[in-house]
Length: 207
Image 1 (cartoon, rainbow, N blue to C red):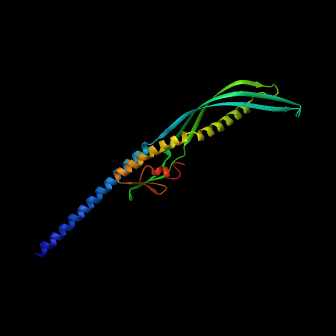
Image 2: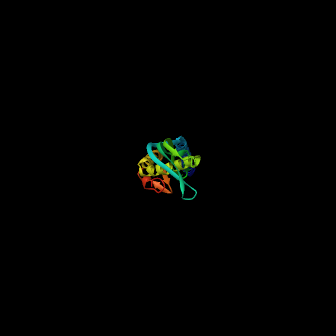
Image 3: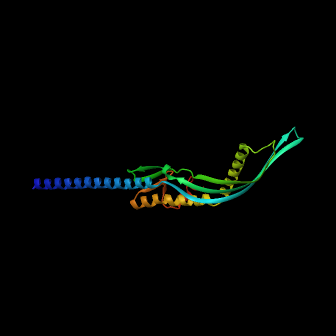
């Protein structure tokens, strides 16, 4: 009787041990599959131009050059019309992430800064220059530099950057939706993300 009872106990222990090992192995397989899905999602996120706009600028350029001290001056001027296309995008192929299978956590370590590209088209009107003070390459460089600074101020005052940031949040929400559906945790700057809206509250994503 004792042998039968002992044998039954051994059988039960073996069954539970086998079931434990099988369940553990199955869990590891599932975690590996989930990790692969997350890696594929990260890989699929490439460079995205999130918003674009158009700006126009009318710029009056003047320059005077003194000749023989203050006795004479040679002047030059031009009217410049600038039409510029602007794009603001995030290269999310540069996003830095860590996948921790042990804690089932996707950690977003770093999100790249936005890239602002300005493509201006310059049209010069009413160019007037003195023989002693002609238009040179340096003048055109000054005009382009001044116009670029002016356009950057307009961009900062517009809704373009905000629209770009909102599109970024929309793209990042894909990570939250995926990890949440798999029972994983999404973190940014070591802060767990429990809601897509939280992205907007975290420093470094949206100012």
